[in-house]
Amino acid sequence: MIPLKRVYIPRKNIHGFEDPIEQWSHDDNTQFLNENVSLDSLTRQCRLKSSFFSNENRALLLSYLNQHYPSGKPTAAQQQNLQLLVDEATFTITTGHQLSLALGPLFLIYKALHVINLCEQYNQTNTGFRLVPIFWLASEDHDFEEVKNVHFFNKTLTWENLQGGPVGRLNTEGLGALYSSINSMVKDDVQEELKALFQIENESYKDHYKSLLNKLFGPYGLLVIDGDDINLKQSFIPHMQQEIKARFIEAEVQKTNEALSHSGKKVQAFVRPVNLFYLSEGRRDRIIPNNGSYLIQDKIWDSEALLNELSAHPDRFSPNVLFRPLYQEFILPNVCYVGGGGELSYWAQLKSAFIAANIPFPLLQTRVSAFIFTQPIPEATLATYFEPLKNQIEQVLSTESSRDALFDGLDAQLEAIKTSMNEGIQEFNSEAIKWCGAQITGLEAAIAHYKQRWQKEEKIRLASQIKGLERTHQALFPTGIPQERYLSLLHFCNRHGYASWVEALKKVINPLSEDIHIFMPYETE
View (cartoon, one colour):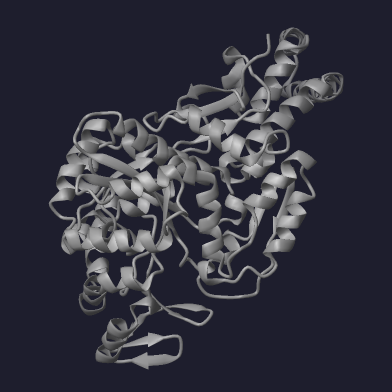
């Protein structure tokens, strides 16, 4: 077990993080969002969702889950949650993500543990409702460039795969070799765990990814759902028909986008006339209106043919980023979606579209953000590590040397000399002012040059201390972005295994705090 200590730092005090939606004004919250998440608001949302989520939808969900979690396969915690979902008083809290290589970056881990812990906290209350954590697998995304790299140990490993189409439908060719490379970089006692974790038993990448998530988070009851399923899409046909016929997403989102812009909010996602893709072998193509017909790649479909295709083959249709939330909330008895700032920005474009589709708009919550220190840091100095690196170095040069006193003395003497020089030419002609000014400029340049050279020499003397600051800053902000958006949990697994880190992080993630979490080992006595 890894004994981690948790410290909070206000989000506004760390660069790289925008204000969360929880800090939007009451008016903006009412117009674009919902209540902020609390144990009470979750209960109210359960009551609302219960009047919309039909027994037929629950039966469909249970059929899907029983197919994907056959008897004997789920963990005890997953089995308990599957049984809970039979009850009409059970609802879900959901997060999701693309199929990032080797479960990176770190915030994917934080997302999963966030929804697990939020459900656990809620279920300790006596409201009459129960909550189950869900991970929605974004397997139909087709931007392989966004998921093909994993970063750890100051290295980047890349899965070379030339297939196209939805990432989840890719086969796992070449993945085994990459996992072998990962294993060769960790200590022997960690290798066996990673071999078991990354073992490839499935032909499709999405099935392999489900296996990864189940191995790590199954013990805590997390259930994985992949929307790329013919039966789930079959149930969503009426809404996809509505999108093709009436283009209701565009109509509603355009109005909301204007209101968001008027309120000074960012419009995250571009809305299209038809917010569906068409899936074919190795492809995911937009459906583009074309003079009363529809263009898909290089083929023209009339409206009747496209709707017939939808009815016959719903698995060939894929909601895009602005339609997928409605699909997800239609399938699930969901009351809250947990996501990052960018995700929640496009959810904020959709409230009126949900109303038009008669699907309850969920509560939205900003996921936990965190930094991991591998060494204990005194709380009194912790905040200084999140200041710009330049400021940190300046602080060292100011406090660990005689710089400030020396420079202040030089500046004072320079001002005195300048005053004396100017006073000394008062009885001369205007030409004297010019050559005196030139001499003063030369003195100022000489002092400035002296300061630069002095600081260069002082940095050499304090090089060890400055390099330590640079290493820590690089660990916290690799490539200039927060650690959680770049590094994989693998980066920390050489001393302790992957599952041990997940267990340790679960104990310190607080899903009801908006502050940035700082994790570090306890100080040794």
